[in-house]
Image (cartoon, rainbow, N blue to C red; front, top):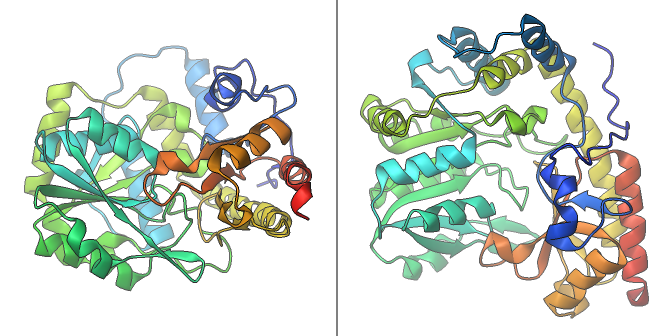
Amino acid sequence: MARPDFDEIIDRTGTACSKWDDMQATYGVAPGDGIAMWVADMDFRPPASVQRAVEQMADHGVYGYPGAHAGYDDAIRWWMANRHGWEIAPDWILTAHGLVNGTAICVDALTAPGDGVILMTPVYHAFARVIRASGREVVELPLALRDGEYRMDWQGWAGRLTGRERMLILCSPHNPGGRVWSAQELREVADFCAERDLILVSDEIHHDLVLPGAPRHSVLAKVAPDAAPRLITLTAATKTFNIAGAHIGNLIIEDAGLRKRIRDRMSALGISPGLFGLGMVAAAYSPEGAEWVDALVQYLDGNRQIFDRGVNAIPGLRSMPLQATYLAWVDFAGTGMARDEFTRRVEKNARIAANHGTSFGLGGESFLRFNLATPRARVTEAVARLQEAFGDLQ
């Protein structure tokens, strides 16, 4: 396989691209001279194997209802076994329209209006959105910030539970903090849920994006096999291979009873995968795709080093050490500035669109999240702009 050209600048404007085409309306940052570092997709082409699969479908020219998709399931099983050491059976796999949809299905099928759903915050903002839209209560357990990284805070959380909780949604690896949770921490999460009879939804969408030198990702289903009767693992190729527009993801459920409850609800809602997503994922989960991912994480780590070195040189700013994902979580608390002020400098002065930390829940108030999955020239330019925007602190 030829080495991917991650340095290629691809103009995504005018392609119905949320990240670039919605940037001005959302942040007031014009795509002409702005840098989009908010929506969590990459500005890179996927592996050539994916492009070939799409071209073959287009060449065929008939786009009818997809039927049996054993090739898709086989590719998922191959990938999980070879990349994560996790052996799964074909009937464990249910397919949703992406993992936000998968999360919503879990909430809808396994909780009732008024129930509490636990989030360890700050955490991916779509979780809280679908919980509240479903008429459930978001129960926020703030992560502890120790030695510059997030930790579980079991003792501090005891008094925050209401007794109405029925589910816990875990983000592993963590978004936005970039932590790879240890096997021991995951075991503690499973025990916490068992003690309180909670359904455990483990969103592991970033599990392939672990950076060089970081701890290896642990599949929760492997380290806590006794959690199976209450465990749903969410995975997808979309984040790994930058094919989020395919809107396809997996709910992997070992327990037959739990799986039936989800399958029945999906049937009632008429949820089934699309033709193009099935083909793209089957092509991505392949030896060629694996080689592409290995090159990707090396490139992302280079971007991380440039970004962290430049941002951490600005007095008062601190980029949290990143073990996984391509999402830098930057704390502006040390500047002493109000949130409106540091946000204004980033958006108006530096002309960078970054996610506001408040959208991730408690603990995110002094942060912004920056997407580093873009050509290195843009990362270098973003660092220079941030250093200029906060130049008075030097």
